[in-house]
Length: 361
Image (cartoon, rainbow, N blue to C red):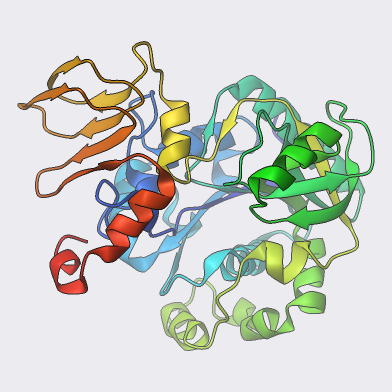
């Protein structure tokens, strides 16, 4: 039986701008199917949450503009568990919103917080790791973060330095956080055996994270003074509009995790992919012929390797010959062809003028 005091908060308010043109402001990454499952990222996250907490204790935080997308993806989600921010202010405000809402319901709550846009390869091991963390946090006043054992020196991830051997299910004291190091430094981290990838998945008592927010991010916590009097009332949206106008835009890592003295990490051995950029998406897709391909229609690909090819057209033939290390992104209204190197792609997209690009966002 699932513990009635265990909760899960799914953060689903990202704009997904790094995956343009596949991800758009009208339908960002968390509502897309980039994985091999045929389900959206949000749907997959919800199903993972169901493994560890009661269904009525799953909350989703997104943006007001994505209300219909969330409901369409999760028709069984209780409407009272859908928390909609008026503006995107990064993860600190998102977590504060969920924390103070949960505290109103259950002062004894222990909460799992996870992004909607990740792919977990072993759901059984994920559930086992999370339940170990929930049980530990229920008995200890700590902020737990799940750290994934690094498989390579990847510069797209943050790193967590710990103070002990990596043992399944054993929380370790966190020494430092490092955000997206250089290739050379990332290799040093991996070789040392002391570092984990920062998965952005957290576990804590609601009372503990509330106290740490008040201690280290009072500019955020103070915005929620009196929230318990407005939640679920006719004035809830008016209250949110007012406080979000002045809400700082900052991550929970910067606001709290890098400053708190009660942070611990659980080494996690399940397969994890953040899929935060095109390089990570290329690494994730199966590549039997050297190309990462997701095409809804038909394809003929010859004399090509190292390519990432995406096409959404169901009644379209994609024919490619002689490309090496390129990215091909084909939607109904946008076609992008560019070298796959992340820096080159970013530079190219940034070079497009605002008038040319704006109507396609």
